[in-house]
Length: 330
Image (cartoon, rainbow, N blue to C red; front, side, top):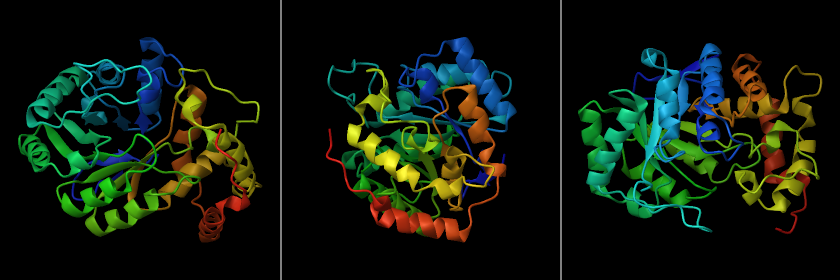
């Protein structure tokens, strides 16, 4: 494993981190607490130190799993969690993907205290606004509250996690331009889905903001294991992807065979190396839902870096949609 430091902080994070949502939410298969904790222990044993969760994952379960897994080892791990969704007072309505958000100082402070309690710690390393829209990015009181929490030592750094789907270009750019205290931005970014992540990367470079990538394998497409017959359970988040994503994606990854041919690396590892080719990408958060993925992804940082020719070829392929004719969304 290799490590990078978040600019303007002394927070060092592993180049491959662990997104706890795969364990806490059931959207990648159900995991009981014992199985989840075994995976978290194995991740730390393999050098992963950054564990990213949110207060809303499993109604706090993502945070309590970390507390149970790393009791007595807090100094060995970096906790990133998120705030914004009011799951305390609302149930997720049927047919609606997002809960209401609350960005008032009172809600953020109360949520921070509850996260600290669930995590079993007195500080959060990276505190992130969870899928903020423009009303949050423009809320001066909200960012003053984050700065107060940092001064009080309850958070070591803060940032934004953009989503829930690819997009939010204006929110990301505005946050980078107008919120100088921000040190980290989490984005959906991968070799197949580079827009608008590339715009954020350039703005972040100018403002010394660390980037953290999630959906690093395009919801598993870049693991290279799907076929045209692949289907997903209704409660699996991948079932929300249109079938065109599957059909186009399978054609696109055929064009990436050069990344694995005569090389001792998988497509999934190459996808992580592509992200890590940018020094500002301090960590990647692949979807880890079993020991197979854990072993594969944890080994990626120590593999040879992609060459300049590799990066140029990928850039050219992306510019022409990998030579794939768009498939009608279904």
